[in-house]
Image 1 (tube, rainbow, N blue to C red):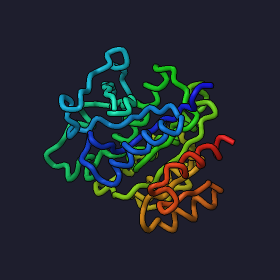
Image 2: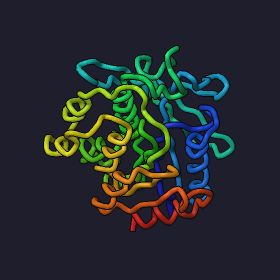
Image 3: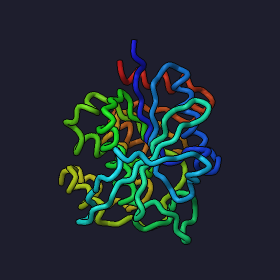
Length: 270
């Protein structure tokens, strides 16, 4: 019997970025699910801080070269891969010189203070989906973690809704700690409308402040379940998740308890 395929779309993963609660989770969860019998693959942006030589990244030419249009400009996708040790899980890195090269102004490893974080998230989402399609790898669970992945559920439910690679897949979104400290472009919804978000859906976000909570809310609008990994979850987000009848897990329920994730995934798949 084949293992259940699970796609992890992750904001940060150790040891490719410095160890911390978020990056450690990005590493430990796929390994735990592999041990539980799943077949995981993992995607992450190839931030400038990722040391390619030390981590033995190499470009996959046959999966690179696609141009992804954002705001009337084409941005080439570069795909690199490495194996997480000791599990040997494949880690795919979405790279682009415009969005993921390190800047002297970056305040952290992911560039939370950048003013183009909306487009970086869009490029990461589309680059991930296009690569999965080329791999002809059909996940049953897609677990997105962190604000950098917050537009991915919308793309899965709109632009890629009819793609057989993602048919029937359940989307889990993890609200992680950390804030976008740069400005979020107010034109983000114009960009998302171009890629399938409807006027009616956009109106649901009218009047909301363009901040990290709004990006999390955007993910919750399209996902099937949510996990709050924060100590004190935003009550507005919790209420929004409840209004959509989303299954919810909290940090207390999952911390140090891989079986909680396993049970959660299985409940979504019925």
